[in-house]
Amino acid sequence: MSERISLPTCTSCNRPIAPGEKAVKFYCLNCGQVVIWRCEKCRKFSRDYKCINCGFIGP
Image (cartoon, rainbow, N blue to C red):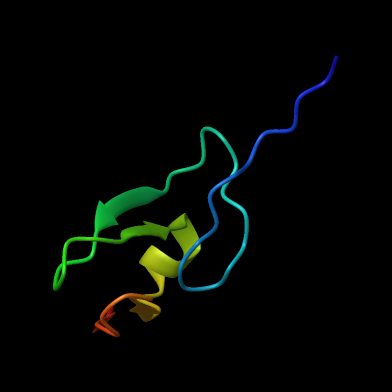
């Protein structure tokens, strides 16, 4: 029986983050309630992300 895995998606670009990729996850710096995922490219180019809970925008 095959099971599907759910990959996290980058909060900035919405691309799935593959296992082993150089990505980071952290809780929103403002509200601390939402997990923010950032892929390597979005981190490198300092692309903005937005918290879906409080609307905080970070680099």
